[in-house]
Length: 270
Image 1 (cartoon, rainbow, N blue to C red):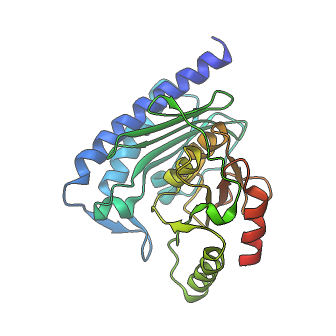
Image 2 (cartoon, rainbow, N blue to C red):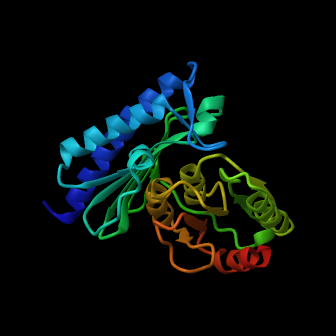
Image 3 (cartoon, one colour):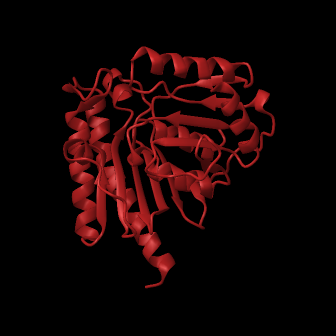
């Protein structure tokens, strides 16, 4: 089996896992939720846990020698170290707060790193039935149709996405809102979807032009979407402009034209 054949197999199995979890999310979306608090505003439900179980079992059955990092497993036992081994990095339900409130921006995010490089990505929103996929070097797709990032070159005409995050201490909230306040004078408008993975996919398919987020949950929020953005002709990087580090809990993404002026705007917003 050639490398491309194995990558195609990895993607196919990940898509199956995402759709199995997606069915659980779809059924739970319209029911009463049993909610736990991981923090003041950070939520987890029985659905998050059930989805992670289904995904991990499916992936381990097909690829028993691969490593696995999942959001709920990491919440219980700490985030595993990322090695060069093929590693599945999974957010079983990105957008849990949206899920709890019946706001339909929720997704399953599954990413595969090989030698620490994001190589396969699957992001699936089961409520509106959108499946984003990408394989390193082979393009990005939405429901099987190739997608590409926008061609916008002007910051003032760009749509920006970000998130407030889960911390509510005054210094963090002030820094966050001051940054947004500065950026709002330079872009067309701002969106907060409540899902890091779907924001990345928004960059990939041209719905969004700019995105950044600081201090999000962990690598599971970005592992799937990072591949999809890059394969759609977008750029993923650290908000400082440095190289993207999947373990850093810092991410920015743009189309292929806006990185430098966006980094300057972020720097001025600090």
